[in-house]
Length: 261
Image 1 (spheres, rainbow, N blue to C red):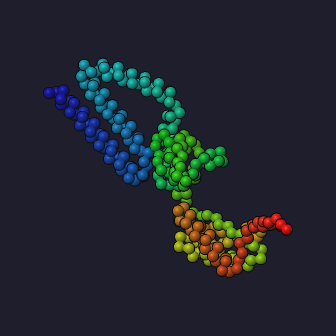
Image 2 (image 1 turned 60 degrees about the vertical axis):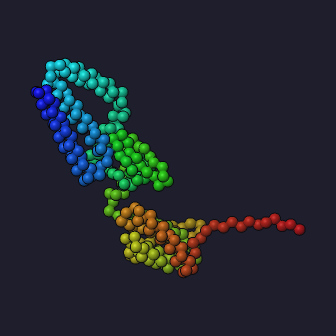
Image 3 (image 1 turned 135 degrees about the horizontal axis):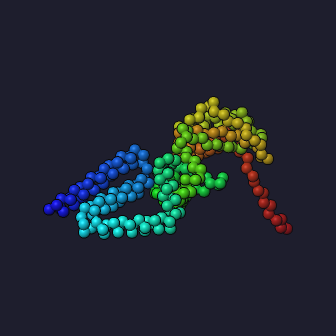
């Protein structure tokens, strides 16, 4: 009877602790959306179960010595495995660091720069304790080890209040520059997704062999709006410039057919 009571008590303790851990992680995940904490939750539950089982085994003479031997063997195996998997362990430690500092999370657009070179760019799709999955716009995905993510420069557009994107348009030297500037300000300000006003600067940023380059910044609340707004504005500028007789120069090639008598 005492045996059953002890086993029941330890089983209840394990169930209660597992339930508490699940509640805590459920609350954290709801608040932060840090999906990579799912793995750490599993690790915590396993550790709790091992401790409870070991503590239960220590209550009985017939299992006390066996549990000590198993624990010592397990510690030795763990030490060997840790030494053999230093690189993987580094990714796990980096994953924990990322989980705490939260430089990015699921659904955010990031650019990963290392040594001045962009090594990954796209939307964060998954974060585990070993790696981060970054979805590109062409459908491919980067699988980047967390040790790389932890040491690289991560540019996260979600940390900025608004997003700015340049638009440049080249017009011919014969065009009415002042009218082109006015049209560009008007088109940018009137788009429903932009934060621009007609006071936003539109400048002549340079010369080319064909004409003058006009440049402005399109301001939007987020990156998705920026993509749509810039596309719409480029199309609208073509139509407005055409109506006003403002030429956008382009190269042509004339092919002369051989003359036959």
